[in-house]
Image (cartoon, rainbow, N blue to C red; front, side, top):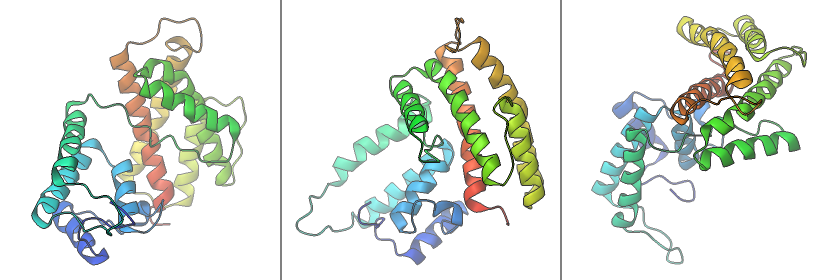
Length: 245
């Protein structure tokens, strides 16, 4: 992808490709969060979609690239051969499918210009890149506290600094229920996140580096990190799309 292009696609043929192959509307508002070009929509789609769908799409895109060849670049730009691209692409797909890839941190966005938030996100990313998910859990909890407070206030609500994470999430879910028409299954998923965040409080207080605790092992920490990230990613999609608002 370069200069907004994706393979040989036009806006129309890319829409048709995603609709016919995956029954996905790549023109949906949720994929315009970072821009409207084909490349930016594809990057956003890959960032917020689940791993199974991401690998499925990457394989199909490679099949198309192998059939039509790479898009020609301007003479002054360096090009890459199919072999240059294929090996790292399929290495990435294998890591994702094997569950050994570094956890995704795309759901942990810098949602406001805030120096503390900037350092908080950077510290989470450093721990994840260093393969230390257990060390990241305390700061992930702090991030969720800041994120839920931000969301509540963005919708006109108030948030007391002493409110625990699951209470903040319950308040946010209540706001969404009153403001928007959200499908029943989506609302159930949102409500289930309240109990997940309540359990996350316990992990943060008793099984993380927030205090002098015996921390969870890496496999469990990875699962907790991925589960909380999935909830944050879902919230991000709801906020971007509006769900019928």
